[in-house]
Length: 402
Image (tube, rainbow, N blue to C red; front, side):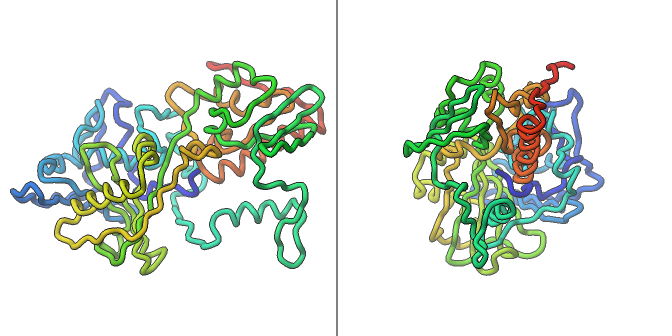
């Protein structure tokens, strides 16, 4: 799930969603300066498009081969109403949409993305979490406010918190619920709150008895579980551009999403010599199924094309997350596909008897974000409390077209 937005370039009014309008949508050329460097006759040369992006003034370098150089001349022109066609158009489109939502705009609904509530409600500032404790420190801090902790260490010692338990079965009836785990432990309660990811709900990891009603199953499968992969590589030395405005650079390929978005970490981790490349969707699934060595070889080939005049050393280490293959996640975060609206969302969040649901996928406005998961937990808890304590158990689902 997204900790912060990755949309570092504020181009909301520059590149619109391709194919969403019958009229050509143009970038504000008067506000954006584009400089296309001339290409040499050599087929191995590299062309660079330099775009100062207001207001952050982050400089983006778009690299492509000589055969694709002519496409750069159109990077500041009107977009094609039928979608991006050139490598440069595709990588800019990818950066604007796939890099944020993990899926291409042709399958992503406008219902929950324009305007994007996270930025509308919390502002445009974007932060990279570099705390060595990891983001789980936030989770433990919040849990410590409600569970018993050790007075000296502050660690959670509440016996009600059971970790490393794999839930495989949830039985529910008007009288209560029973949860069975993989080690054959059984837990009984009046209610259960299911916070498993949308991808897990779409898998067969957890068996519900009786089976969930058709309307619930349909809602679960109508939403997408996107895959977003951040691949980290460590090098013996730097060979990429550094300094203010050079944190991000893009690789323009005729293959959409092929190792396109790069980030260096000199500001966050000085002298770490680490690069991050992001892939999503089908590229993520493809990469998860191959060896890290094969992935590293593909990446090194791309980097040497991007920096043909540099002595690019082999990466000494690589980290490739496999969220899609992990049975406890089956992806990274949810995405609203074309065709769904508040009706399907209400069904996705709706309880079934004494089984309640929460998670980032049940956040109406902030799905895909950590704060969406946190706020949805509060909302779902209030729904459960209203039923358990106030006997207000009816959950209203508004009609599809009401």
